[in-house]
Length: 82
Image 1 (tube, rainbow, N blue to C red):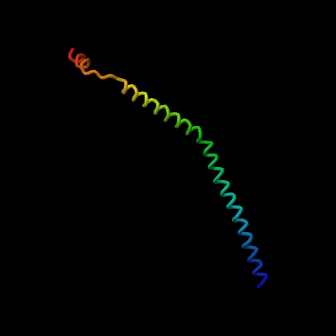
Image 2: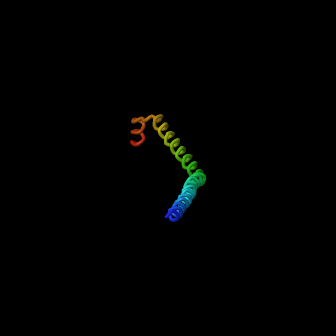
Image 3: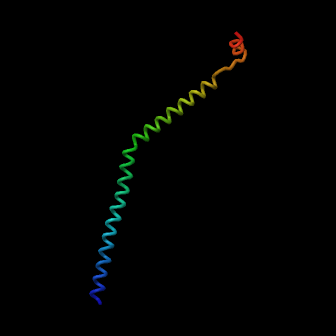
């Protein structure tokens, strides 16, 4: 009885060690893939940010032009009456 109990305890201990090793491998793999994907996609994110900034600057310039534009009804009527 004691021998069987000892054998079972050794099996349980071995399973626990294997499970711990695989848990460490799994966590390392998740962290490694996260870092690798960040390094891989960082240039694309930078380009996307630059594109967004350029579009935003362009739309601001269009708004500024619209705000500075003086609309004159009389000159428009003269233009179409010719």
